[in-house]
Image 1 (tube, rainbow, N blue to C red):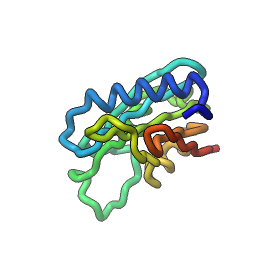
Image 2 (tube, rainbow, N blue to C red):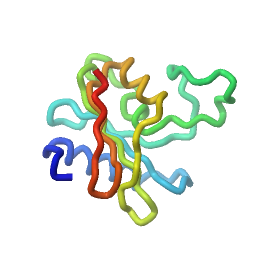
Image 3 (cartoon, helix red, strand yellow):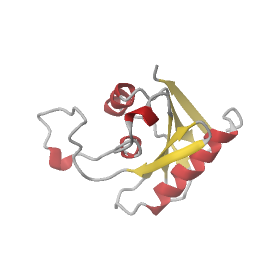
Image 4 (tube, rainbow, N blue to C red):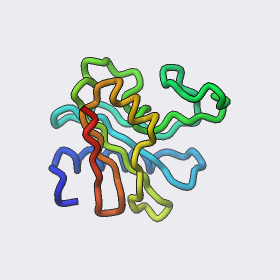
Length: 134
Protein backbone atom coordinates (compact mmCIF):
# COMPACT_ATOMS: atom_id res chain seq x y z
CA UNK A 1 0.00 0.00 0.00
CA UNK A 2 3.08 2.23 -0.05
CA UNK A 3 2.24 3.54 -3.56
CA UNK A 4 -0.85 5.46 -2.35
CA UNK A 5 -0.54 8.81 -0.61
CA UNK A 6 -1.45 9.77 2.93
CA UNK A 7 -4.85 11.19 1.93
CA UNK A 8 -5.91 7.89 0.28
CA UNK A 9 -4.61 5.91 3.27
CA UNK A 10 -6.76 8.15 5.52
CA UNK A 11 -9.82 7.47 3.33
CA UNK A 12 -9.09 3.73 3.42
CA UNK A 13 -9.22 3.88 7.23
CA UNK A 14 -12.58 5.67 7.11
CA UNK A 15 -13.98 3.21 4.55
CA UNK A 16 -12.79 0.20 6.56
CA UNK A 17 -14.26 1.62 9.78
CA UNK A 18 -17.61 2.15 8.02
CA UNK A 19 -17.53 -1.42 6.66
CA UNK A 20 -16.80 -2.87 10.10
CA UNK A 21 -19.79 -1.02 11.60
CA UNK A 22 -22.07 -2.44 8.93
CA UNK A 23 -24.14 -5.38 10.12
CA UNK A 24 -25.99 -6.35 6.96
CA UNK A 25 -25.57 -10.12 7.24
CA UNK A 26 -23.35 -10.39 4.17
CA UNK A 27 -20.18 -12.50 4.32
CA UNK A 28 -18.07 -9.51 3.28
CA UNK A 29 -18.58 -5.95 4.34
CA UNK A 30 -18.04 -3.10 1.91
CA UNK A 31 -17.24 0.46 2.90
CA UNK A 32 -16.45 3.54 0.86
CA UNK A 33 -15.32 7.10 1.45
CA UNK A 34 -15.76 10.21 -0.70
CA UNK A 35 -12.55 12.21 -0.70
CA UNK A 36 -12.15 15.79 -1.92
CA UNK A 37 -8.70 17.22 -1.45
CA UNK A 38 -7.58 16.02 1.98
CA UNK A 39 -11.08 15.91 3.45
CA UNK A 40 -13.35 12.86 3.72
CA UNK A 41 -16.82 14.24 2.91
CA UNK A 42 -18.86 11.10 3.55
CA UNK A 43 -18.77 7.35 3.96
CA UNK A 44 -21.11 4.63 2.78
CA UNK A 45 -21.73 0.91 3.08
CA UNK A 46 -23.65 -1.68 1.10
CA UNK A 47 -27.34 -1.18 1.80
CA UNK A 48 -30.07 -3.64 0.77
CA UNK A 49 -32.39 -1.14 -0.90
CA UNK A 50 -33.27 0.01 -4.40
CA UNK A 51 -31.72 3.17 -5.77
CA UNK A 52 -34.03 5.19 -8.03
CA UNK A 53 -31.31 7.24 -9.73
CA UNK A 54 -29.13 4.26 -10.68
CA UNK A 55 -30.06 2.90 -14.10
CA UNK A 56 -30.34 -0.83 -13.41
CA UNK A 57 -31.50 -3.69 -15.57
CA UNK A 58 -35.29 -3.24 -15.70
CA UNK A 59 -35.82 -7.03 -15.86
CA UNK A 60 -34.35 -7.37 -12.37
CA UNK A 61 -36.69 -6.93 -9.42
CA UNK A 62 -35.55 -3.76 -7.57
CA UNK A 63 -36.37 -5.47 -4.26
CA UNK A 64 -33.22 -7.58 -4.66
CA UNK A 65 -30.92 -4.68 -5.50
CA UNK A 66 -28.31 -3.37 -3.10
CA UNK A 67 -27.03 0.18 -2.97
CA UNK A 68 -23.30 -0.48 -3.21
CA UNK A 69 -20.95 1.32 -0.84
CA UNK A 70 -19.42 3.51 -3.54
CA UNK A 71 -22.89 4.77 -4.51
CA UNK A 72 -23.95 5.09 -0.88
CA UNK A 73 -21.05 7.46 -0.13
CA UNK A 74 -22.04 9.87 -2.95
CA UNK A 75 -25.81 9.55 -2.50
CA UNK A 76 -27.33 12.85 -1.40
CA UNK A 77 -24.08 14.82 -1.76
CA UNK A 78 -24.16 18.04 -3.80
CA UNK A 79 -22.94 17.39 -7.35
CA UNK A 80 -20.45 20.27 -7.15
CA UNK A 81 -18.71 18.50 -4.27
CA UNK A 82 -18.66 15.16 -6.12
CA UNK A 83 -17.31 16.56 -9.39
CA UNK A 84 -13.54 15.92 -9.49
CA UNK A 85 -13.53 13.98 -6.21
CA UNK A 86 -12.13 10.55 -5.38
CA UNK A 87 -13.99 7.49 -4.10
CA UNK A 88 -12.16 4.87 -2.03
CA UNK A 89 -13.90 1.50 -1.59
CA UNK A 90 -12.82 -1.53 0.43
CA UNK A 91 -14.15 -5.01 1.08
CA UNK A 92 -13.44 -6.43 4.54
CA UNK A 93 -13.54 -10.16 5.25
CA UNK A 94 -14.70 -11.72 8.50
CA UNK A 95 -10.99 -11.89 9.45
CA UNK A 96 -10.88 -8.10 8.97
CA UNK A 97 -8.47 -8.23 6.03
CA UNK A 98 -9.05 -6.28 2.83
CA UNK A 99 -10.07 -8.27 -0.24
CA UNK A 100 -11.05 -7.42 -3.82
CA UNK A 101 -13.58 -4.62 -4.04
CA UNK A 102 -13.25 -3.54 -7.68
CA UNK A 103 -16.45 -1.63 -8.49
CA UNK A 104 -19.07 -3.25 -10.72
CA UNK A 105 -19.96 -1.81 -14.11
CA UNK A 106 -23.04 -0.01 -12.80
CA UNK A 107 -21.05 1.71 -10.04
CA UNK A 108 -18.33 2.71 -12.52
CA UNK A 109 -21.00 4.14 -14.82
CA UNK A 110 -22.66 6.11 -12.00
CA UNK A 111 -19.36 7.46 -10.68
CA UNK A 112 -18.48 8.64 -14.20
CA UNK A 113 -21.95 10.16 -14.60
CA UNK A 114 -21.46 12.05 -11.33
CA UNK A 115 -17.96 13.06 -12.56
CA UNK A 116 -15.88 11.33 -9.88
CA UNK A 117 -12.31 11.52 -11.18
CA UNK A 118 -10.70 8.45 -9.53
CA UNK A 119 -11.68 5.36 -7.60
CA UNK A 120 -9.21 3.49 -5.40
CA UNK A 121 -10.25 -0.01 -4.37
CA UNK A 122 -8.81 -2.82 -2.28
CA UNK A 123 -7.35 -5.75 -4.21
CA UNK A 124 -5.77 -7.58 -1.27
CA UNK A 125 -4.78 -6.61 2.27
CA UNK A 126 -1.74 -4.61 1.16
CA UNK A 127 -2.68 -3.91 -2.44
CA UNK A 128 -4.80 -1.07 -3.79
CA UNK A 129 -6.00 -0.68 -7.37
CA UNK A 130 -7.04 2.54 -9.07
CA UNK A 131 -9.49 3.43 -11.83
CA UNK A 132 -9.14 6.72 -13.70
CA UNK A 133 -12.76 7.65 -14.38
CA UNK A 134 -12.16 10.81 -16.42
